[in-house]
Amino acid sequence: MSLKQEIEEKTGKEEKHYAILINNFKINLSKGVPKFEKYDTINTSKKLKIFSNFYFPIEIAITTYEELESKQITYTQEQLKEKLITDIQNRLKEQISNIDKIVNTQINEKKEGDTIEIEVIYEVLENIGTNEKIVF
Image (cartoon, rainbow, N blue to C red; front, side, top):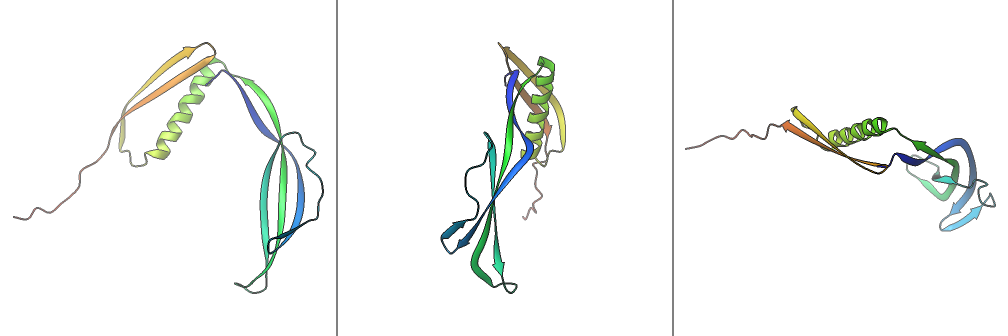
């Protein structure tokens, strides 16, 4: 990962456009495109229902545009190293859920120019035995 990174953050500004869907026919109630330069699009729809399981073939579609802003972040070598290590550890803990005990952790670091490459190696104890009845 590079020491200089560009991230996109939501500014909190949003714009909603509404439409009515009747079967496959769409009627836009809002016209135009969002006024934001960069934005994230979130589509939701709500069906009209009469009873608990009976719906009309009519939907109200809501398209929400949330403004995004690009920011340049420059990390120090230590900050980026800590960020990468915690990201890698969180990803590994999600993938390997039944770890009994972490015996050893080895972290290898390699720096080339303004990029840092981190390798994390876990040595773990895991119970892989099974109980089986032996019949003679």
